[in-house]
Length: 349
Ligand SMILES: [Zn+2]
Image 1 (tube, rainbow, N blue to C red):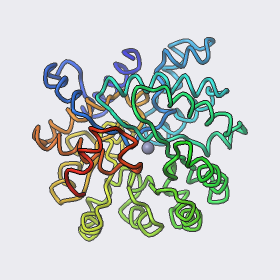
Image 2 (cartoon, helix red, strand yellow):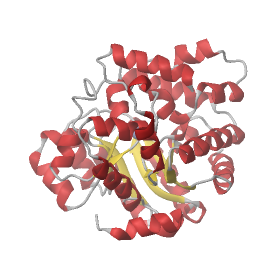
Image 3 (cartoon, protein in one colour):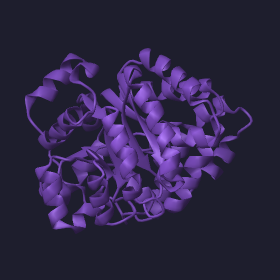
């Protein structure tokens, strides 16, 4: 893990000091943050694969090559790096190995429940057998030390027609751990309004709905996501520019899946200090702490909580955020065990 992480931190520091430097973390405090039971709700399997695992998947790769191809300066470059990693995944076993490693990492971060996003749209685009790949993932998730459910993600810029088979497959896999459907990728080239029908079909099929929005585009993108029925918003940080939108998110209890380091690394915010997380929280908007693509961003979930602490959250507030992460899960409380259920029932959203 140290390989990409240290490089990532150096780049982040060079890009404006937004990265989380290990040497600045108080060890005992981090242990406390790790121990809080929490959920991770915005996490892409393909963005979690560390260089060592990538080399197991493709032994012909050198660490230098991996660093070269996963380097990026902006959001477009990040998407290219993400696609490059995706292309390394050729078989169901590759996906299963990625999940095995991720589940151990999550357990070590105090995660008791995770909703992991699978780029199902990319798997279909690659011409691979989604049924075989998801079968291997579902089997692997049964052996994981934490509870895992799945969000199937379609790619905005591929258009609504390409998203339809993703919804159909997800709907058919609800008995095997798929809880939700979402869209990600390029907000500008694939506006949410074009997915209204697809979202309606997903909802009617019993899937919950999430949508990346307001990450690289403005608050109108978040409004469009709400208009097509999104129940959680991936990122959504542009809401800070729109008072009425923040009021709507607060009153409807629609949470933003916040990923601070991700936003700094892709350059959509100038630095962690400039991130609107704290201001959104103070405006009463429900917020959740997540990593997004921990290997590509060189971050961990406990590290993101530590970053939130530095942005002004008290220990009690961080515990509140951890409880919120369980409460806003799409799965039924029994999916994440007794402790999760207690917390989920302890207070309303
Ligand atoms: Zn994401």
